[in-house]
Image 1 (tube, rainbow, N blue to C red):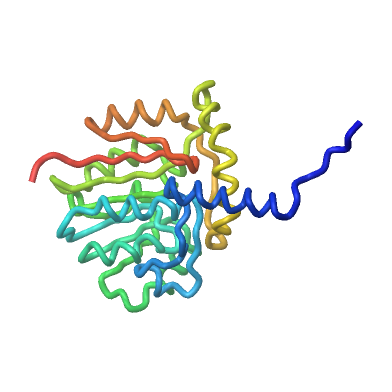
Image 2 (cartoon, rainbow, N blue to C red):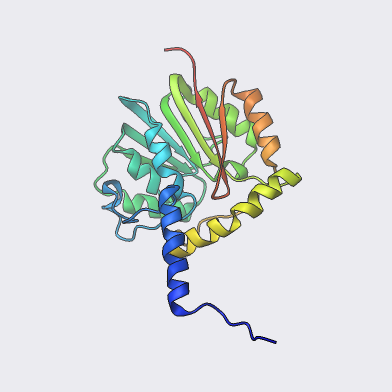
Length: 241
């Protein structure tokens, strides 16, 4: 029987280059991962599947945005980027370690404020923001209560973007996850995915279907989308102005 052998070095290199080309084509890999003018101030820029959604979030900021809020801001990476798009930015998180780090990195941003508090009970202005975003934080809270409060705090004409995690419960949801698994793994390896130390983590309890149904009920007209790197996004514009 002929003995099977693994790929040669040349074949492995060809596979690696091909994977990079595919990821570049579908927008999951940049030729220069950290060539981002809004992250140059960070001493140790990083990439992970949350940071992968930052460009889309920043593109959603309304023109002439006055006040922006980042819910579950962590170490403040996205909030610092938002200072390029909004006149005033507030980040809120209930982790003392994350807020301490965010404040440390906020030097040179006089219009950037960080609040250590529970978003659901914090003293924040009603209808006080033109843009509200939240990345992989809403599954740490009561989903419907958090979404309702974000809706309440958004000014008429403002935009809300939520990036979240959910769990698979149907064959269709599992099929999408399994099909995307190789791309997710390769992307993480190529981009050397990591995040700040001490970032709180918990598993989501709502399914993708439950998230979609609740969001459509609370935010009429919301745009729901499931992304390759195991995230979903909700984008909603509040009527009025």
